[in-house]
Length: 116
Image 1 (tube, helix red, strand yellow):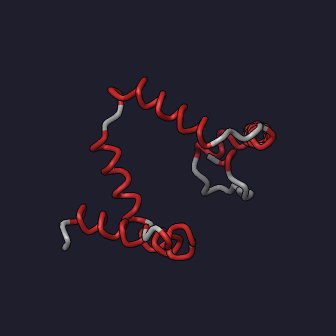
Image 2 (cartoon, helix red, strand yellow):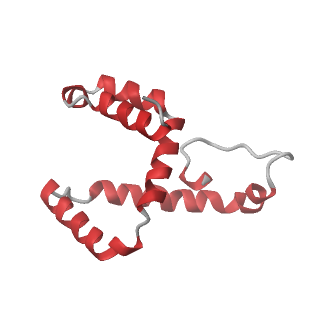
């Protein structure tokens, strides 16, 4: 996780043992992660159509591996945890306001929580 972080981590005697154990390896891993994201940024963009086609195909191939109820539960817990930030972001975005996504999300939250 430290390899993917953009901030510097200072280690001390109270640092967790796993961080101390791998401290010398982190700069190496960090450079791998940076190179990986640099390479991704250089890749050509794909069209929305190509992305949609790919996702449809992946959904078809892995449809029997997906636990819909588990995924919905995880989404619900995530949304509850960051509800205010998400609702604020939906308010700020013109596309989201146009399509009333804040209201729709609030309705889904109320439905999932049992509120009316």
